[in-house]
Length: 235
Image (tube, rainbow, N blue to C red; front, side, top):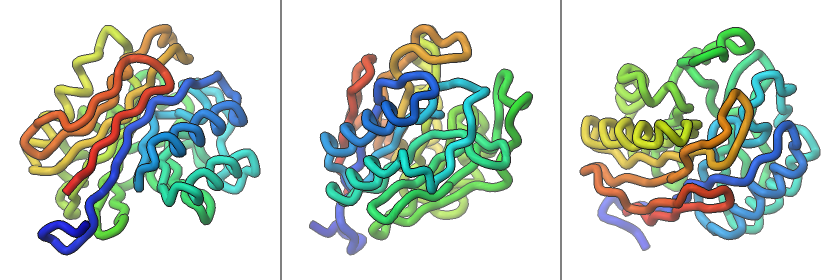
């Protein structure tokens, strides 16, 4: 069904797969299962979701045959999946996967913690257009830098999508940042937050992935466990 802007409603999911350190094959299977379950047009996954938060993980090549099950799942569901991975050039990235294959979509601009020892910052904001919806992309610390949201939203976005990793002790942080971005810029915000243990000392992570309306209302919310997702229909 079309909305008043003449475009279809957007079925959007934020997902938090169970992740095994460095195990691309197992993690792709977990991603594919969530794409199938959500049956959403766009599915957003957390930061470094394909490898875990392992800063020494090898770069993931978008042409890697191990991604094939995820490509197939996206083809069957008609989905675009945005997955987290280290990529060539020493970047933390979001890789866009659909039924035609995979490509690097966005490189994290603001690095945190020990990340600068291995990675380089991306150069610029990125906006993807899906079915008439303009989607601005962000990864973790980007969301805490007001300049990132301002520059991204200045490109004209409908939804600010973020892949994040936060400790369980900082569970309120993604919510605070999402609320600020939504209400400051008048956009929907979707945050896919890592759930379950991972590297970098993150024995307990926040989960609770969610989607917000431009007025700050929470439209959908996952719990704190791996394997969960939240689904919202944007109009």
